[in-house]
Length: 473
Image (cartoon, rainbow, N blue to C red; front, side, top):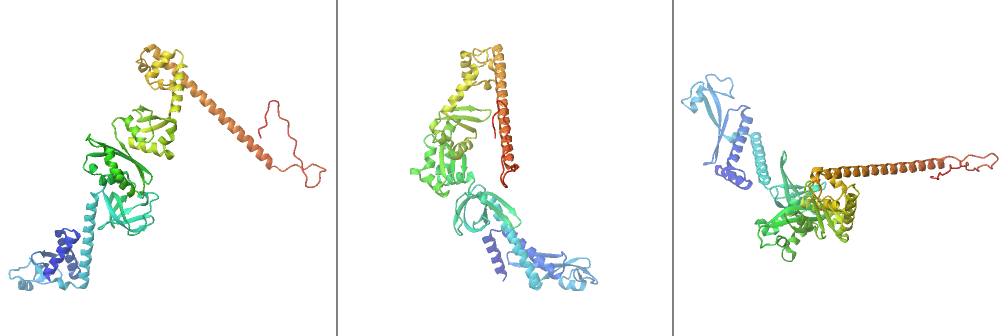
């Protein structure tokens, strides 16, 4: 019997992964709880488990007295000397109890304590295991679906795949189906550990490539950035420090085998693999592929790029509903403004003409300012006159005059724009008011004319319009 208890403890410790010492402490606490339930709610019990013999020793400590007034905490000197001849009044004597004497209710209480402590220990073990696995891919089996949220069975634990983390239009609603997902969070709740997984997170795409491409897992090829719209399209930028390896080719694989494995896992999501470059111009040109890039204007202060593409490739560069340029912007980390070549040339021409309209600026000065990067009168106001003076052929005095002229020109344009907008708003209000008056007039009942047949009516005469007026109704 004693060896049987020892065997059970070893087996539970091994199967559940619970530390044996913690399991023994739980067992001792359960026995102590049972003893208190049987013999009184005092805390003068001592429980010890002997791992060598597999026995549990339970002692009930009582004070040795001459006359017993409370049998729960006292023992007479006569009874004490039967157990220990050296006992004396005032000492505490441990009276050994038999665990079998605790009764059915006490035993049931001990069982509940053991079960609860085992659940708590197992919960902590599962949480400790998964909290360090955030960012890893796990395989689970769909156990049930609750209000659109999918519960995955991971073996020892359950994972939650919320609706927000599911790929749109992806149908995996069959119970028993195997599913891969990325662990994004692990929480310890009162009901147990909650593991949250995702199939839409950009790191899920990264982890899939790491599993499929040995060069990535070995650190030879590195994924620098990922941009993804789950279920539709994604872009990844890759690089390598080994000049003998093509990072894009390594991710694509022989005849596209590696990237196709990832695409199949994502149920057909399109993936663009582009080479990373430290040169932002080359990087954005690759990110906007398959559209070709003619020119890139870089604004480092605003972290913005103006990209010029051929007219016939403008829609290709922007993509459906702006998806291509949006993903490229996320991949690069800069704001991207795509323009067609004709529109860009037109803007350059208008900007150059605005320079020529400034008093004291001829073609030579306009060319010098244009070559220095000031392509319009508005661009001149973005710097101080002292900086304009650094342009070849422009001195301090001339720079001051040009800057003041540009300021007056831009202010005049802004005033004209405001006046035009005010005129348009006034005209809009006028026509709207006239239309409302006409509708109200149509709703009025016609006036009856004396002598007319019953039920007949005539329109009221309309006052003639003044000279130069127009009908607006």
